[in-house]
Length: 157
Image 1 (cartoon, helix red, strand yellow):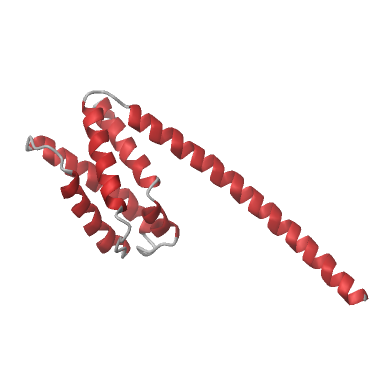
Image 2 (spheres, rainbow, N blue to C red; image 1 turned 120 degrees about the vertical axis):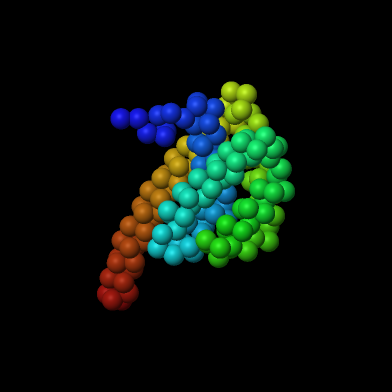
């Protein structure tokens, strides 16, 4: 059975993957997802954001227009405000829009260097996060053990 993903051109598939990687590196968005600022369906809203960005670029291609980072910035700000209740003050939407537009231009020509780089960075963050969680759990276990023995000592004194 063939779905839309099976019919997707490799350049477009790489761009979709790249958009997901870029958004995963965006601290403001990841905090919103982690803390469910968009409600219980925050993760779905994040996935929908990927689709909306890809649709934005698809529409420009059909209209034979060139993507402008400033237009994409506005789209990002609107979606973050409406779906996640985020009002950015750090200007990070400018960098995200710039990277997405640049990556789009690369993917059009079959150059997936930025997508590959973003995938590697995401993998490193993921491994680092897993290691950090493991260390945090080990520290908590050690603290609980220490707390238990400290209270035993203070009770004996």
